[in-house]
Length: 236
Image (cartoon, rainbow, N blue to C red; front, top):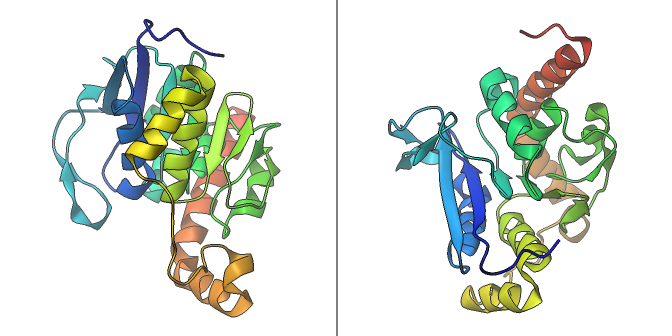
């Protein structure tokens, strides 16, 4: 649904200790460079913390102070985030009013833990794509953005910018989306062209999966248990 350019577009990016910045920065920046945008970096407090790999940062807005927004961006966070009811309640509350909820990388599992994937077509990292069915989703194994209603999901890093472009196109029109794409000079030229399992081949794909297997298992188990507990009404 296009929103008039004279109507401010409110965009919230969930940030927290352990957030994987490549999953959220490009999307946040793409919206920030668009006309008549109000952005929020949201967390429980405004105290400084370290993102994944130790990058220091801080939120600009707390959960309690964040208004209803048009766009909510959720990237990969620490695995225990998928069991944090304060985070999940914030996501569910904002998703009710948002025109677009963007889930990137393992952030899609957090959305699954919150129950937002039920009956939806969705994707994520290739390591966990098929597991999305455990959260009621219809898995789509692709490296492209998957759109279902107001839900926009994608794999890591570049997926956040591509999802933002899709949302800008939907809410502000193709002309503005094209301007942002050109502003970023987004025209990827990958050196090795192995950015998906089908391109990389089974041997390299397996190596990458093995390297992240421990974290993947923890993330899936945490999100799965929380989703099931919420479905059964056993979480506080």
